[in-house]
Image 1 (tube, rainbow, N blue to C red):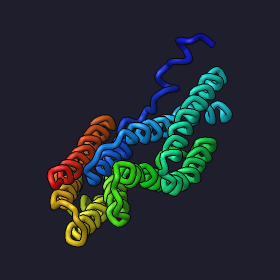
Image 2 (cartoon, rainbow, N blue to C red):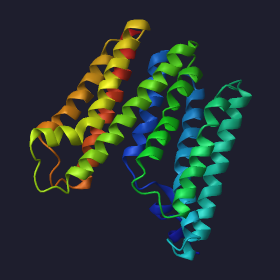
Image 3 (tube, rainbow, N blue to C red):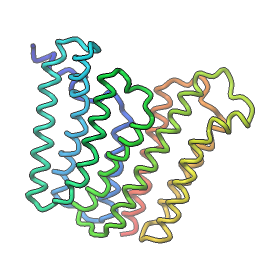
Image 4 (cartoon, rainbow, N blue to C red):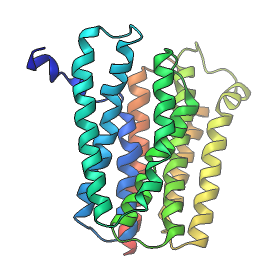
Length: 276
């Protein structure tokens, strides 16, 4: 195995671009809510980054056993898997030695979800699995309470509310993407009742998110822009009633949703920073 083949991008980085915001966004929100920066956050970021990257080579490794990847991919995938796993474990141990033992409880939910994902890959059934994507986004959103605690935050209610806000937004984003991917195959948008029928799930998710954010703003020390960000996402979902994604390319759908999710996370994080 030559070095050039070992360092191919397919082993090192995930092919999905949108999933990055599902943990980086919550990570930034947690820091902003705590209002303090600690050098330990760099260790936490490294731990989460390598754990996130671990999925790519491990998925390729599993695929080599179901004849979905050539056997020549097995050794480099294994090496990258072991490398990422070692780095993630080392960073996590450093955080435990620093006294952040409660991070263990945030790590545990990710294990069964990861195994579930690998099982689907082994059965060639991972595509189009909206349910596990939503659950996986919830695991990645645990970056919010993790960074909040490491940054010095102490309010448990705030920590878990941050997680809920981040997860709910990611879940609504996933549902909206699936709606637009379905719409792109249609010949026309149809009548308004047809558009409403296609959009009801997305509208329900975004409506719940808006209500939840309004509740959070009213009951906890959360900036009002949290509700504003949810309202903007709601308007984006409503816009599908006006302009369905007929003949949109998947890249356009993905980039639009990445921009929307990034805007949400940035607005919420800035809201907390301005409240400091």
